[in-house]
Image (cartoon, rainbow, N blue to C red; front, side, top):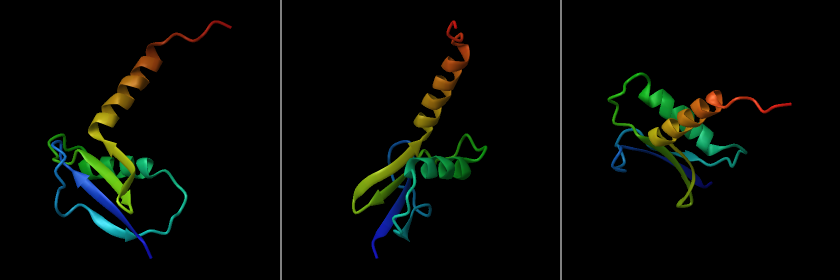
Length: 90
């Protein structure tokens, strides 16, 4: 059975030892970026000094999902911008 590999990296892109792992790839449908987002939030918790910067999933050497602190910040900027945009006139 194929393997699904997870890597956790710091802000320089260096793989952090002790975080990543290989899993049996069951090829379940789903968004691996959402899984990476959840794992990033769990690994970082409330520790703003955490070295964990991004989570990546690979299948057969190809990246199939990722999420990073930079993605979190971009998402928050988008949410803030949407909150400030007045509703369209009916």
